[in-house]
Length: 202
Image 1 (cartoon, rainbow, N blue to C red):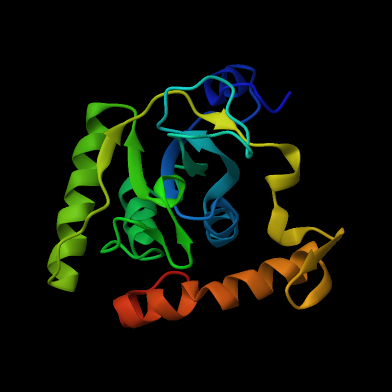
Image 2: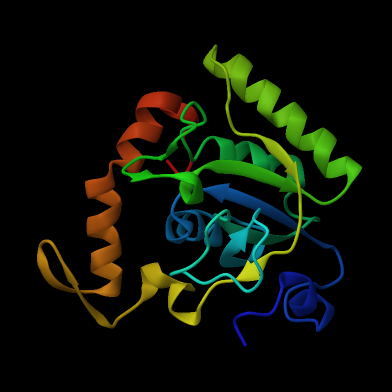
């Protein structure tokens, strides 16, 4: 059932509830973005998936043209869209147009996918504020949202996984393999170097 579009999932009541909104963003490896945002107060769910491309029913092995992305659903009484996007921009390298950290190529580019004029305005404002804060150009584009294809089950909450996988450092649980990957990829170090005290998560 993982090939259902996010719109169908929301329509079924699987994600949306009263007073919730969804932000769709691409920030490199979707495992990392999911991990960053699931612990943010007000966030009620984060789903990994693919979006931004033209192919139907993309998979991890065949998602050419699509970004690895996440759908962040949050309680608007606790946190607003503007803050979610501001934190997202401070969790990535907004100056890198070729991918993120050790992950290179179009699937790992950054983007904000907006679903209505209010989100578009808020996202563009957040990008401008991020550029001003850094004193550098932000290359993360604001794009119109299309179909969000939910990724395979094994990608959801990968950072919490207990199954054993083989890594360059030998067999590890999924959770430990994720930690090894994240550190080896230099994600947190680069975000901290770029954003300093504004980096998210701290």
